[in-house]
Image 1 (cartoon, rainbow over the protein chains, first blue to last red):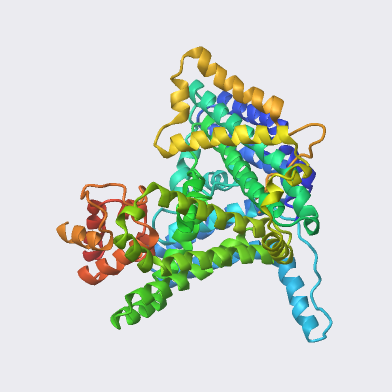
Image 2 (cartoon, rainbow over the protein chains, first blue to last red):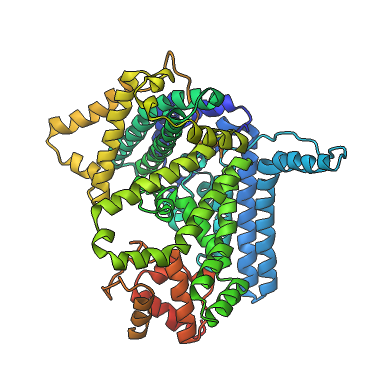
Length: 523
Length: 76
């Protein structure tokens, strides 16, 4: 599905492009610094709207309408609250949610629902009634809608007061570094910081630029290079089987991580320049021992959003509580826990899958994780019993290693379906991987016939090794950037130039490479 | 405070520092533990905790949980 009125324009303005890094970002920085403190937030807001216009054209009206809507609904809720009119407050909240989610469903899922509605009609040999016209998608609609719903939720729960300044809400919803791929911010965390108009300091500027280059290295050296192999296999999957498909799924998992976390580095770096600390979206996810832990470390702001605005409200609803209490009262505490978890997790993972896009494979992706997490909750008593019986084994490093590798395998299988162009292709590739598995494909040069040569694999290996090393240090609580900053000058600049030259020399761009759009920008 | 600490230990026996201020931010309590804790707090103190109260600020430490319980008991 196209994500802007002219996707070509959108790809030219993405965070890794020269247009953004060399022209747009420096221009906004310059105007921001030249403006007085009072006008700086307006420069950011103006820059954000220009950015949106460049990517999505007239579709900028969608986020602007969302800003006006949540501004008015927030004030309406607050006014009703002051008059102790709970009915009116609820009406405002439900109305605001219905409009926001209605627009999202109409723009993003309209053609999917129409196509599937037509299929049902055909089952009864009737003429399909719906016309399937793919709609142009305003960039970041899934991200800013969640932020807008989160804002209304926070005002509803009285965590924050309603915002009177429409400009502040506008900047919160459309801040240009976050609009394409998140992170999904909360108004209570970033709304006011964005409006402070902090000066650009030398320290913030250098730190921001360093982080942008680190993200750029991840995307251009690894993700864009791996895209060739992934594209080759997924583009003609019938020609491949076994290890080759497994390798493509592994490579896609690495590509997605390097691309998404790299983009988040560029986003966080852009924010850092303006003295704005944006929430982190990753916390070394590949060190997770379980699938639930993986989701607490991967796309953190999305998981936290679903937890706060869906999981808790559903889990704490009178119906689910009543169900849990009834079962607990009969002495079936574990069954109650499992039942309540299933009741709350099912809608969460259904929405998580569909949030990524209107495809059956995304729905399957959500249900896959729902089942895995439910299984892990169900198996808890046995795992605890096993750990109590064999305490030495349970606490051994080897056991932790096995758990981590098991999580990798489950995640890679999930990504195999996530990348597939539809559920049919996902199932076909999975079956073909299992049926045709031959270890000899690892050394019979099958992997060297997928568009990447030995040198490519060496470059990918070195960069993945560097990212792994940084992750290990981060996992041990060490701040790598600060430690590099403390190195002697020649060594420090050696590291900076190393990253810069790495991007220039080994980055996958120019002749022989197709520019790769940001994957999450399509969601 | 002692009562809240006792309930917290029943839910999460691994918590050994009563002054720990990172129960949520430090990922000591996961969402299921929080739900179990809420259920027990509600039964013990005869209060009703709404989903809006489930924030890191309210559940990060024994002290903040106590403050929330006290506020809800006073009916604020």
